[in-house]
Length: 159
Image (cartoon, rainbow, N blue to C red):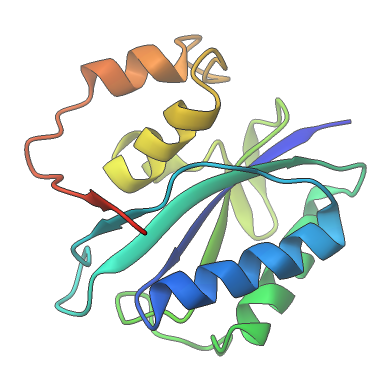
């Protein structure tokens, strides 16, 4: 059964929306592994700070069904499907890794290309899966995080 890693973020009532999303995702996928929640400045636009975390779960569902479930939870949290890309988000759920899948799939590129470019994705993933290896690079996420330039990332842990 594949292990799925999902980046979650919100900058509209972020802590409450993440709690709502985690409850809904737990109801769909069962037990979740959840990183600490980091609060950091919005990326790509000016707006309220984001609350970000990474979560993981095991599922027998195919990637398309996982994506559909994530979209449904985003909508439950108040995100319209036609929301602008670089704008405030009630909820943003992105598949970072789905087992060992590599490639372009309807609705996803795996591993997620910006995983290695965004501290708010890589750091929380390294928190919960430090020994996991990147499916293309073969490096552990702990090693990738240790080598990551964090000079522009100044998060604080959410309460």
